[in-house]
Image (cartoon, rainbow, N blue to C red; front, top):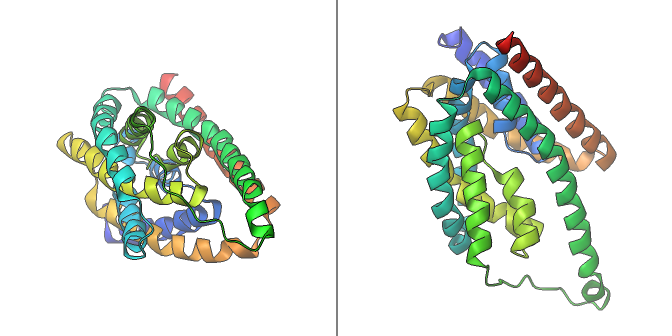
Length: 271
C-alpha cells in the first residue's frame, strides 16, 4: 500500500501529523514515525531505518538555521557526532539481527524512558532559569558562556545517542539534551542546538548501514520527512498557545499509548 501514489500521499499526511506533534511536544519525529509506519504494516526494522530519513531532513533544516544565525557550537556538535557515528553503525547492525518482538519491546522501553528524560529536562531548565534570576533582577543580561566540555562526557553522550539512533531510528536528541545539560553545563537552548547538529551526521551513519542492509524505503521515507518538516513548523507555532499542563498531559498520554502499542506488538510476535 505505501509503495503506491495513494500510499505516498497518506504518508505525507502522517508525516505532517507527526511533525505537528513533534513540534508541539518538543520530541523527535522518529519516536512517532516508527510506530506510525508499523501501524501501516511496515516491518519494524524497515520502519526504524526509514524514519532516519525524516530525522536527517529535520536535523539539517534546523541546523542550517542555527548555523546561519551563529547559534551553533559546531565544535561540540562535531565531537558528539564523531563518537555517535560509530555506535550508530553498531545499532543499525544489531537492529537488523534482533527479532521483531525484541525490537518492539526495546522501543517501548525507550518511549517510557523518554517521559522521565523530558521531565528531567524541564527540571533542569527551571533550575537554570532560577540561577540567572539575580542577573536579570539587576538589569544585566547574563551572557551564555561557552565552557570547555570534558571529552569523556562528550564521548559517553555521543556513543549512547548514536547507538539508540541506529537501533531505533530516532535522532537521539531526547537523550542528549538532558545529559548535555547535566554533564556539559549547557543551557537547554544550547544543548538542543548542539545535539541537532550532531544528529545530522549520526542519522547519516545509521542510514548508510541500514541502506547497506536493504532496509530503507526511500520514497515513503521522503514523504514522511517532508511532511514532518511542514508539520513541525505548525506545531512550534501552536505550542505557545497551549497551557503547559495541557502539553505535558498530551505528551505523556501519547508516549504511554505508543509504548502500550509496541508492548502488545512485541508480545503478539512471540505468541
